Length: 80
View 1 (cartoon, helix red, strand yellow):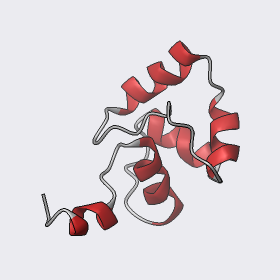
View 2 (tube, rainbow, N blue to C red):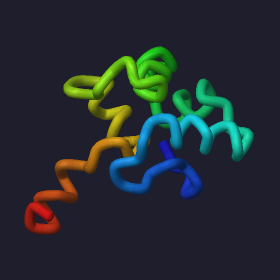
View 3 (cartoon, rainbow, N blue to C red):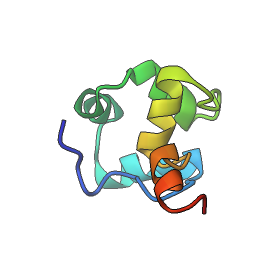
View 4 (cartoon, rainbow, N blue to C red):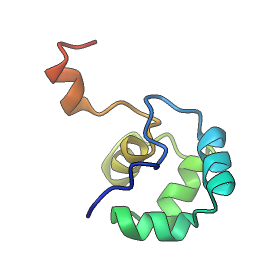
């Protein structure tokens, strides 16, 4: 799926800031989840700080939200 360039994808964002981004831009979390192919419940748990995004779909969602850095780009950048 094509990613929206206005999604909250800056590195290591604070989840509440992401929640504010959705509200400020009028983007429904459920619509963003469908676009990204992620579970609404997993994303909501990340945004409210109830999930840390350690593995599986929650990890993929944390990367998509920019809460965690993408491991693929870390290796390409030399571990920075």
